[in-house]
Length: 312
Image (tube, rainbow, N blue to C red):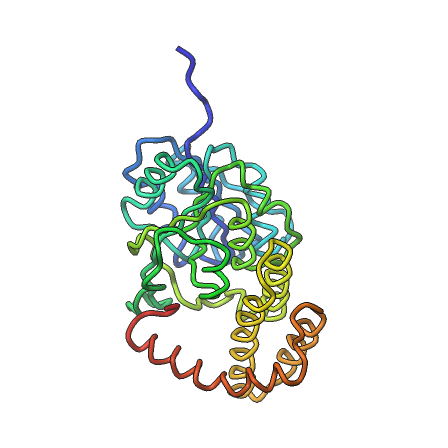
C-alpha cells in the first residue's frame, strides 16, 4: 500500500533571542495529541543568547525537529517566509518562539479543516501572559466561528498569529509578500482566498510584549504593514468606507501613543503614508474626526484590558 510521505502539518517556528522561552515553545508542539505526522521547522534569525543551542539539543532528541539557522538576519517576516517555502506539510502552522500551544490545538483545528473543504485557514483564541509568566487575560472574545474580510475590517487586528493554521495551497499568501509585513496583512490575504474559521478556546499561550517584539523595535515597519493591509483590502473589493473606519481607528491609536510618548515622528510618518491612498480621502477633516474619537477608543480599550480581554 502506498503511503503519503508528506507530513500532515508543518509547524514553522520563528525565533530570535528566545532562550528563556523556546524550549517550552518547541516541547508544546512535540507534545500535541495529534494523530498526523508533524514536521517542526525552527528558523533562528541570528540569536546570540543560547537559543540555537537549545534548538540543537531538542533536535538531537526528536527527528521531527528541523533547525534552520539563518546565515544572516532576515527579520521576522523574512525568517518566516524561508520556513514556509521549505514546508512539506499538507497544512502549515505559524508559531512565534516566545509563545506556546495548549494540548489539543492541532487536533481541534485539523478536525475543522477536514470537515469543511471551503475553509482556507483557521485560528483559535489565546491566553495572554507577561514575559514573567503572569496571567493577563485572553486575546479576544465574541468571535464568530466564521470570519470574512468585513469582520477583519470591523474588528481590526484581533487574531493571534501563533494560532494560525492554513492549507498548504494558500502559502502564496505568505510568499507573495515582500518583507517586512505584519500578521494583519496576512489575515487579509487569506480572507481574500476563502473562508476563515475560528475555535473559541484559548489553545495558544501568547507572551505579551516580550523584549524585541516587532511593535517595539520596528514601529514604522508595523505602520507599513498596516498601510499594505488597507491597500490589499481595497484591492480585494472591500468598501472604501469600511477601510476608512479601520484606518481611522489605527491612526487614532497612533495619535494616543504619540501623545503619551511626546514623540510625533512616527505619527507624522503614518499620516504621510495613509494620506497617499487616494480612495481613503484621509485629509485634515478625517484626521480631526479621528482625533476626537481617539480618547474614547483608548478608554474603551483600557477598560476591556482591565476585564482581561485585549482585543474585544
